[in-house]
Length: 190
Image 1: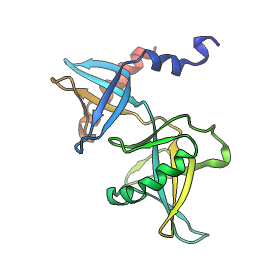
Image 2: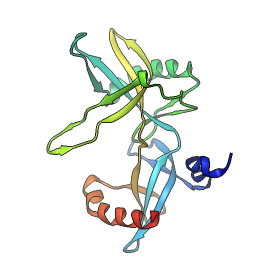
Image 3: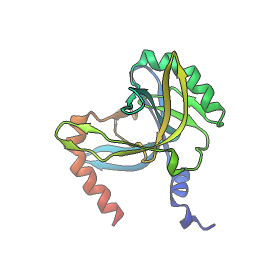
């Protein structure tokens, strides 16, 4: 196995890591995928060390079922223990990390039959449909829940504060620096 066969793994072992912390004090360990300085400010592109997951609640009847993303902290707290137990059966450890729930462990191979395409409807923008892989499903109080992991990597953009801690960019800040970041990243790739 030459290193060129597995460039992602090779890059990640060499990349440094950094910890994001949310306002509740939860942490998210990330690899630094890219680091660049624009006008004296250092920015980093971060990839979580563990795999992000999303929990959906299935609603509706057999013909018109809809998957609703569970984002409510209280609901997540209620179902966290059950989700943790069903994922443990696959040797995955569910963690309540900052900005996204994550699982530690080796994800099962992707099977076409287990994929779910999430059409994202956003006012005025055409967002690409997101492909998700089903990891497990369970019931809680007659509600069916499904745990998925996105096939596309979840990336975070942050600035390095004067304290040395990373701070996530707000959507407004990201829009301002996005053209500069893309320009720098594309220049590095060429």
